[in-house]
Amino acid sequence: MLPPNAPGPLAVASAVTDFFKSHITIQHGTFLFSYLDNQRIPATEYWTTGQHLVPLSAGIWLVNEGFPAQVRHLFLSHSAADILCFSQLRPEWLRVPGNVAFAALGLLATAAQVHFLKERFANAKVHTLFDVGLTGRVTDCKIALWRAGKDASFKITDDFVQISYRSRKFSIPAAVFSLNRFEKTVALRSNIRTHKPQDFNSYHEFFVNTH
Image 1 (tube, rainbow, N blue to C red):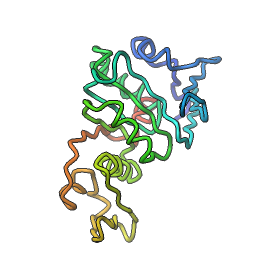
Image 2: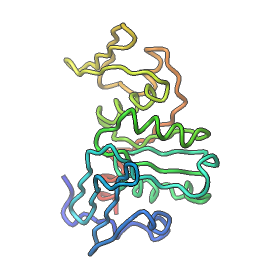
Image 3: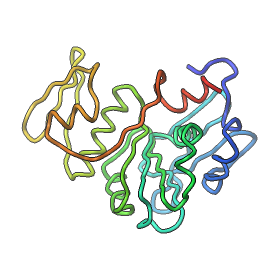
Image 4: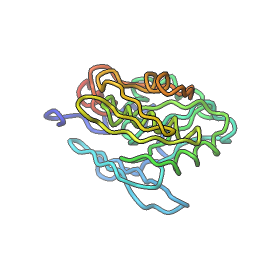
C-alpha cells in the first residue's frame, strides 16, 4: 500500500531521468516503459503518483549505451520503476554509461529472457534488484540457475522453502532463505550480486516512503 501523497516519478532526480529518458514515454506525469519482444511492444509498465502497474510479459525493458560487449555490470529487476528508484539511491552506477545495462523483466522472469541477456552481455557481472520478499529471493535463485543452464522447483511449506534440484530434495527455512544460502545448499556458484533495500520490500517502496 502506497502512503498518502506518495511521490511519483516526477520526484526522481533529473540526472536519473536524463540517463533513461530515451527509454521512457511521459504522458501527463505518467511514466510509460515499453517491454520489447522482437521489436514489438507487447506490454507497458505504468508509473504515476499513487499507482504502479507492472506487466506480465515475455518482453524486456532494456537500457544500455554503446556496445553490449563493453557492458561490465547488468542489473535485473521486475520493474523499470525499481531500476530508476535504485539509481536515485545509487547514482554512481550511472557515471560510465557504456559500462552498465539495466533490464526489467516484468512480474514473472523467464529463462528465455535470461538466456537472451546472457548472450547479449557476455562480459557483464549480474546484479539483481528483486524484492526482499520470498518471491524476489526465489527469483534471484532462478536467475542463477537459468544462467547456468539449470533449473529447480521451489515450494513454500510450513515456513520452509522446499527445493527439487537435480533429482534431490532440499529444505531451507523461509526466514533465512537467500541466493547465498541456496547456492551453499545445492553447491552452485553464480557470482551474482543481490541488492536489497533496508526496511522496505522493494526500491520503489523505499523511494515513495522516503522522498
